[in-house]
Image (tube, rainbow, N blue to C red):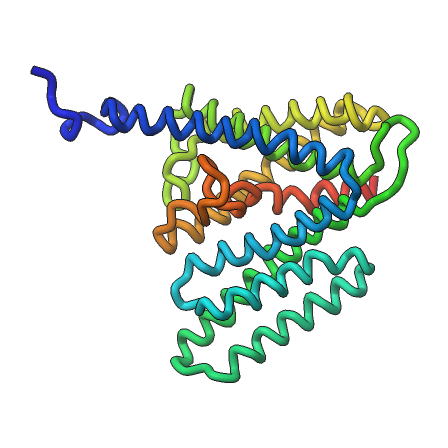
Length: 293
């Protein structure tokens, strides 16, 4: 008689295998639904639609980050999310506005934490976490907003620099995520950073990096023919590498708080923060390349 499922190793347990396959199918289905909508919003919708989505996403991600920590009170989360959204929106009014909103939001939050401190240790932790949520999510999403706001027309492309740049950023990071997932499943043997993210492997990381490089090459071929293939590959490598660092950064918070997913907004993917953690770190790279190259 074969051993019961409870005694089988996790990798051989039929119920767990069915659950894992189901999760993968849900993950793929969610992607198939969201991808066309995202591409439409980026390339063809009025620009305010995607800008509004990005600003709302900044607030949502900030909320998902701070809610991992019990010390942050529920009534504080709205203020943190609102200020993250304001920081993300501010580049639309110039970089001086960005600097002003960033510094005033941080000062206002820290001042608010002084009003009723209670336990000083918890108040200090709460103040630091709130400032982190606003600056981390607000400032990095602001790079996506600034990228998408670039209206420069390109004679070699049907889309302006902002639309093609944002799509390229997402494509390179998401391709890396997908490549890392499947390469890790197929070839993963050596742990990449077990302390922070036990499931990630060296082989998965390499597969993700190669996928990001391929996406970068495809992006310049389709949307940036004025750029060279080598530039696309190099940008893909940079976005892939920084995207993986962003993934580990979020994993650090989840491991520290024993949190599986930052939320449940996206079936199969977890929270919005889970989905865009890598994009946030790649955003400054893409913005710098678009504006300085």
